[in-house]
Length: 226
Length: 226
Image 1 (cartoon, rainbow over the protein chains, first blue to last red):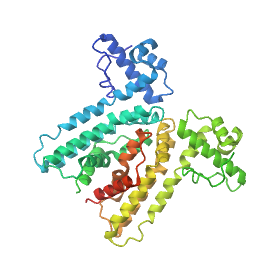
Image 2: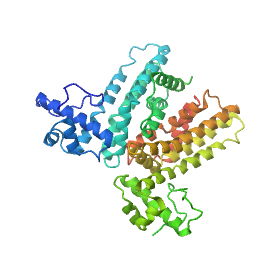
Image 3: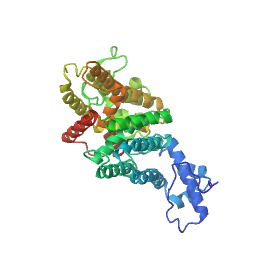
Image 4: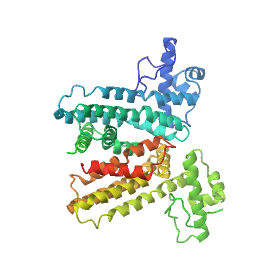
């Protein structure tokens, strides 16, 4: 049976149905159910081991409905992978105005710590790590898709962070030579090790809030040269 | 035909033949040829799409020889993946004594820049990136192998770097609160972005020596708080 409309697991947010304005409500429910089933199966088994039949059966729809909604397995995979970059998009959008209220350098430290905690929390989720592993797994088969994922996901957030830093520099609140490079420094001081280790340790422990806080604070201290 | 003994492509260094003391010279040549063929095929096609028959045929040996030398496909894969961590091992060993001659803080900057260039050069090689991608691809199927790769490869180098920093702190040449954490900061300031981007951009450009130098210098400057 189709999942109730609006239900999602945090990964499927904003997989925009093509031609949604023309599609009846029931088709949207089926589409969401297919997307959810495909995401689960691709993440658990990989691309090759997952069949369109399995996706249809898990979603409780016919194989023909999967084809009607998404096309073949490759198209379904591409849409799933690029659909989930909406999380990165939302995060990048939220970054842009997140320090508009900051009016003195004294508040920068706290604002960066808060940003670092949100950033790290988003990235270390087991679902995000599993999706990254899946995309990397298929990077040799679908190099354009892997590059597009990187562009719309991690690179978009880095670019938004660079814009934020440039704005802070312009307002005299942050002193760095090159805001784009500083954004990369900040991001990888914060995320580098957990992202890297997270690719290889499949069932590694999820950091606790206290660990996230400590890592975020440390990255900000190093970044600000304290 | 077996490759000439001693030939290797930089990835196959020190895949130690089990029971090599008893094996005749010809077996060692065959073993190296099988290891090389398997490495090429696994990197190009992945684990699932590579058969023992293909490995045997590419190496110019019989399938039985592959079984005799390595066992089944899974054992061959495990041995290949863990064999290549010898590069990391050699790098980690070289780190240990690399700053023994340093006798004043003034020389630290140059010594760290040189270390950073070597470290970055090693990691951004297309072969290293391809191998990382391969191990990550199979991390869900073989979680223990991916974890062992991480432990013997990246984590071993980080640990050696932490030991080096602790030694420098003890000799009054470096001031950091926590050498282990500082090693991680240094490594991901230097490698974080290229490692991450390198997983998704399969045919991305290899950094030029000038780009490596600039990235290495920048990481050292941020690390030392300049």
